[in-house]
Amino acid sequence: MHLVIDGLKLIDKSSAHTTLRTHLDIDLYQADNLDSLFEALLSVDYPLGIMLVNTDKMLANLGDYGEKLLKVFTAAHEVNEHIDFNYI
Image 1: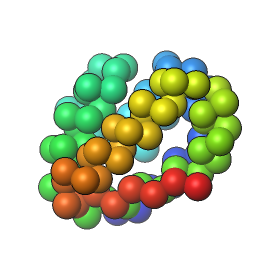
Image 2: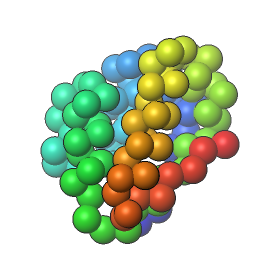
Image 3: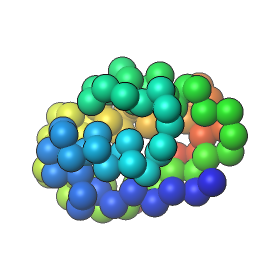
Image 4: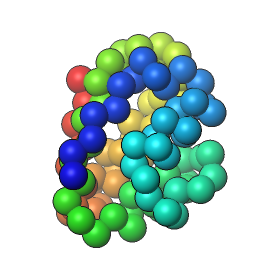
């Protein structure tokens, strides 16, 4: 599976988690926080490509939280061999 997530849609924490939860469709991702996202990404046991586009817009909207979000995806990519994460 390959997902493209548009950073333009990640305008605040709530919309970011709603958008990510809709795209990722991982049962374990229930709470609107980065720990829940990370745990859900670790549970992925199938090939999952994630491309985040308009990252600069996401960072402008979310600031430090956007930086932390990138770190979560990057860490999940490093730990879980099934996840391929890139951003532009």
